[in-house]
Length: 562
Image (cartoon, rainbow, N blue to C red; front, side, top):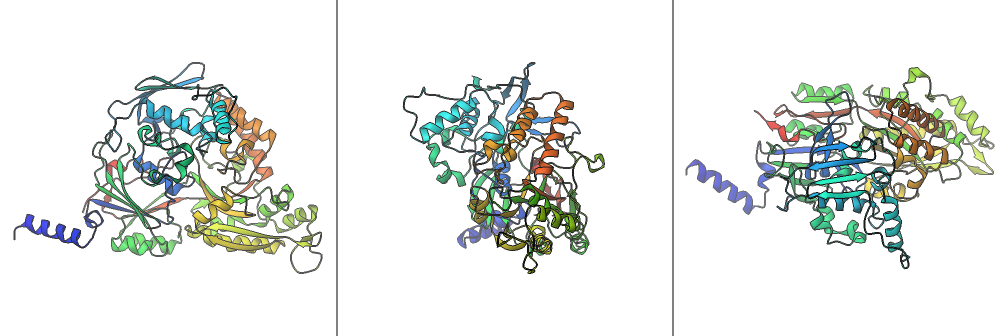
């Protein structure tokens, strides 16, 4: 039997036995391990966590992405080959590529861009990106208010609003966004996973109210470097390279996004069952040494995100800022970084990455570092009326013991390890803290879309622009998106709006310093730490890199060598 017949025989055998050829083909399949499963919400207007975002970054494309190799904020063309900002800062025009096709072969045009961003403004979609990206666009608020009336059956007698005035199709390959006022972070808002473009010809056939329950949500058709093949919930998502990709066609044919157990991921990489372990959370030196001793490559970068403790400000106990500040003083965050992260990270005092130009450095003395101070914690609790009147070790008020529950999602080992430590710190301060561990899909309706929680641990990835509208503006408090603390403050709203409208970088920095100072005092969140991103890869994988703002920034050039 000659070589070709042998290969054909084994291919037929594998298909007969139901074995995936792509799962076994050496050198043609990359197996990328991640600890948490995506929800299957593969749409930029709907997803809420990074695990779905990873899928979007493989299958879809934005207009631009940020050039992370540059010290200055600059951008790399994607679906847009060029762009122009008007002199008055009120309009941004994108000139689109003319050689792009959707994965089903339909040409990409300006109609897709207009539809995508108009839908993001539609109240019936309830997009997580509306507040973050669209509010400053002319007519976006009016369209959102009209579609809210439609959704609620209250549109009778109103003048119909057919679209967003400031989203303009100039021709089949030119789109202009017009802003009500100068909008400083305009371009960067088009450069992340929430800004990827979805196909009009598919989604226009689905009523907006049904998007979140549509089968299309779990089967994305994009323009990105990889085509979606299959999604097995809590197991894996499979992709095949897009041979018609407008950029460089990926060298690796198949991509498997595999959900792995963090306790076995290391063994899977060393045995060859994985090629990449992303987001390594066991950063003990002896654990990292296992990788390097086996010849694996460890890649480490400062993260563009952080872990924090969300605080439900609508809980009467936690609405008092003195209580929140007491909680901050009661937790030794530096000890968490030193002992759980083994120094692979830093403590944060505000909601931005420490390398950001808008983040006040500790040596400037602007922000309160909330260094561990048990006496200060107890003092603040007492000022708020919480003292231990019955000698049981826990503070009480009006006959009620101060008891809280701390919920957290599984999937991140350091976060899981930090939860009982945080609970113990709070107990030492006199707060009885219980723990509830759950998967993210169970946590989301309680803390993200609902308020059935008191304290919660969660992580957040942020963009390169320090805009915090989605997280702390009052208008976002009941959207079920990122203002999970339900923080509402008129002064903060004014500062956030000023930060978006100020075009002078120096003046904008001053505004962000004010924002950070106020948030540092109010503590709607308690920022815990920013852990370094650590990945381990097989030495056979060449040209591997990852981005802080676009995970698969050079996935097209990844390849295997023996």
